[in-house]
Amino acid sequence: MNLYDRIPNNVNLSEDKKLQRALEKWLPNYLDWWREMGPEGFQEKDVWLRTAVDVGSEGWAHFDYVKMPEYRWGIFLEPALPDAKVGFGDNYGRPAYQEVPGEFRNSLRRIIVTQGDTEPASVEQQRQLGKTCPSLYDLRNLFQVNVEEGRHLWAMVYLLHAYFGRDGRDEADELLERRSGNPDKPRILEAFNQPCDDWLNFFAFTMFTDRDGKYQLSALAESGFEPLARTCQFMLTEEAHHMFVGDTGLGRVVRRTAQLMKEGDVRELGGIPLDIIQKYINFWFSYSLDLFGGEISSNSADFFAAGLKGRYKERDQYTDHLAVNENFTMTIVEEGQVKTREVPLRNALNEVLRGEYVKDCEKGLARWNKVLAGEGASERLFLPHPRFHRHVGEFAGHTFDIKGNLISREEFEQRQAEWLPTMEDREYVSSLMHPVYEPGKIANWIAPPAAGIKGKPFEFEYVKL
Ligand SMILES: [Fe+2]
Ligand SMILES: [Fe+2]
Image 1 (cartoon, rainbow, N blue to C red):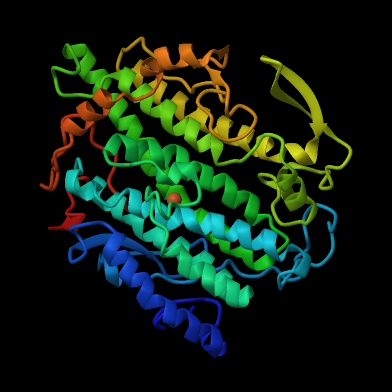
Image 2 (spheres, rainbow, N blue to C red):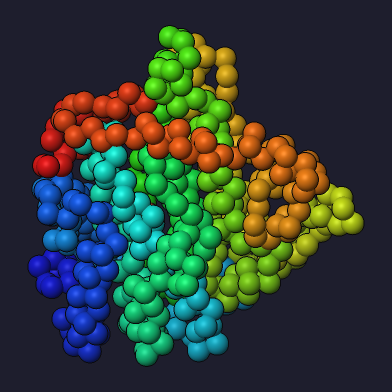
């Protein structure tokens, strides 16, 4: 581990002078982007952050006060397996690709650029949130997520520079040029152009949208292109914290709301009513489902056949790694009706991955409902039907109610205020967002966490303001 190189890395960067020079040229552009688009107003503050210092399961994270622009962004890959093999698809069992196979070059570049684009996008979406944090603990978690998304951008940029020559370098530059929500140069995926400007959005985003990231990275961690697999394996260890922030954050909002429900009217008491929480869940869950791509997809079949993108836990969960003879029963819309159709399994792999994701999200809902039950509330939260409010794939262009029944566009438009946050809901939530910067204090609309970070108490001064 060369932690004190200009670019910390465990890929022996100093032995590849050309690559090192190229990345050192990209570094100041990255820092310019960070200063322009990273958390606004906190760049000079000391934040108690974890920094990756090793990829081993023991002690890979080091905690200390750091100013964000001085964070040790670096390139960390899991160690190579001797004798790695392609784990699925038409080249199953052959040696893993150590270089980009020419025939898959465009597909691979597209996969890496699409993943890479989400990382800086989320930092841009979240850049104003520090000004309204509910506690110093939450402020620190926000910044932790932000610097790690910055590191994930480094991870993808390393692959582009190291393996894709000139067009890889061009793509790396463009990753710093697109901007979330900018109509002239938007980020690639729609969920990453949506505003994330209040903390309920932030928690729902880290719960649902970062969790999409977990499934995409897991599928890529199976990749036969070994540098990509090893990169994604290490990113997953960091990603777990982001989902923890979202899952427990929403759980704490739910707890506080349930407590206020016992005292009277949640709105009058300055909390977030359960129906608004439900609408935020509906919004971010449906946008995150879109990130998996079309239900029936020739890309998914091609990526699998090529050994580039596997299924979730491909090695551990499946015995048939070819997936050629199986079919998948897909729900589709035909002649104004919801029907089923058999499609080749390889064409259904986006939907298979989406199914794993939905199961994982349901566990989060069960945890929040347990909080509600524990506080004596009889109301329950739920996931909307996966057909609801979709903009990509089989169900885009049709309108469904929250339970997945096909309805007319007029009916959807009449009823969407029941299901999705209205302007008024968003304004109400943002009216509650006032910063709480005193150690140990917390905003009224959220409960404190069950524990602090890394053995520190909630009262710890996580950010020195
Ligand atoms: Fe990430
Ligand atoms: Fe993340």
